[in-house]
Image (cartoon, rainbow, N blue to C red; front, top):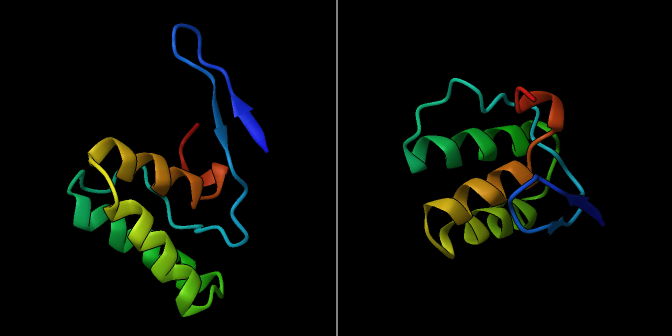
Length: 83
């Protein structure tokens, strides 16, 4: 597992996703449904099975907006995050 250390914030451990969306999240409407749709489309294009995509969607819906963003980032290729 990788860790991300941002000064002033607690260290978070981020699990490696087997399939990664290559759809850019930068510039996507901040609406939760738009973000989920972008990640879902990217996972489909990456060849992820339906069960894997359903798991990602359920994880995104399992908490608040901050959780949705954290899960979306975990399932998106770093090159598509604009960092």
